[in-house]
Figure 1 (cartoon, helix red, strand yellow):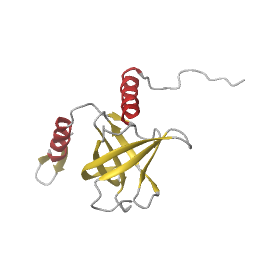
Figure 2: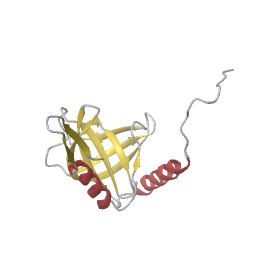
Figure 3: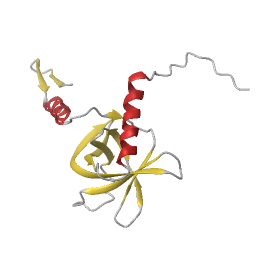
Figure 4: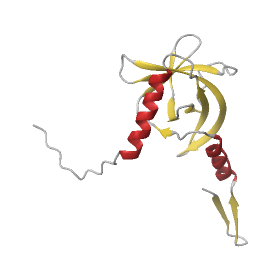
Length: 158
């Protein structure tokens, strides 16, 4: 959406379309629909010294994904690193490794918190890609038929 600023001194309104334009360009750039999966599962990035750092996954598609870290946090990998390994944890003991190449980085602000958001392409040549693809397909199917829980059903425990 466009951001409007009301200048009450002279009654003029200034409309900032730069954020809206950037969003539209990003939508056009993507070839496939992405599914938002915020706070769904544990997601970590593996660093060069073989340690895990938690990241927040924003969306997934067959060909790419995006994740974010707080701006004040130092990126857990070297600044020049383009290829990273992401682990999607479905339980404490099992994860799906996803190998990605960082394509872009931008700063976003969500409810006053600033994040560094990374757009990535997924390596389709690795053996784990078919499982990743099936997961994305599941999320797409789920997104089309899921319903929001409005608390309209009584819950009884036995």
